[in-house]
Length: 389
Image (tube, rainbow, N blue to C red):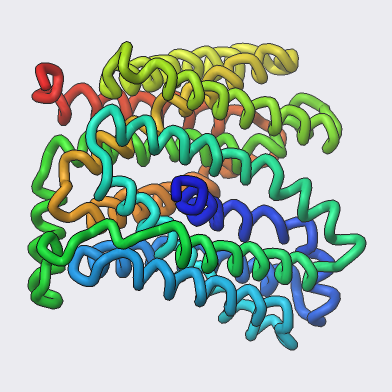
């Protein structure tokens, strides 16, 4: 069940990164412009956020499994339409539906775990899910690049449709309903509004949620800017960038594995505090290196960058579990707000880290410690009462 839920959570990086190598070919194949093809990414990301906001609260009243099954079916069909798209307009529309259903799958996967587990056990499960899902951003570009030549960009979407079919089978056979009828909230829009007030009104939830969201903000600042920093600033090749990207992703996965082993010896709150502290320290060292040297050596940038990215293995799973644990009466709504904040901040960070051009590491070096500082403040100020819990 955990593997299926992790695959559902991995749909976003898979559906984003796998087809990126084919964007130039897609523009030529569909006889359209590069900006038009790039809209397929924009609509997908918008769909991810909207899908989570809508389906998360809805699932608190209708249950998880039926919506999860519907989401995986729509994801599969949308991938098939993408593969067969005769025009860029059709592709853009299909990508929107792929994003909406993918966002629904992500929020429901988190809610299913929150329904079944609490405290350190939930943190352990979210960390394991992060380990499985964390492999996706590493292998997705490699798979996409390898498939582009033999099967073309349409073949990549057929592969995504195959992954969707596996998800449908997984939900059918391995994922039971995790929200009993007696725990559901009927009442339509009024119930949704009550759930939203209940979640937003929980100060401790907001503290953990902001810690999670700004931790992801640091991660997305790295993802958005690192191709330009590593290649244009440090002078490494595209192949060397792929190695750097894989090493950093592996560091985050190893940290998440360590986090699962340490839970039980340490509380999730302690490990989260450690992760945010390391993120802030690593980001600060990165900022010093980027702003005090005109031509920094590769190790001056890559070492603190590795530390910052790896620290998120202690942040993401623990922050998710602790936030969800605060709103157990509306786990779907809580999960939806986590996802909406996560991708909303990502959409904001992505253009900001490129504002000074592709030949400087400073915007990324500012964004990472700034995100870490906000996460630290949220953790210290809003979750204070949980110290004695």
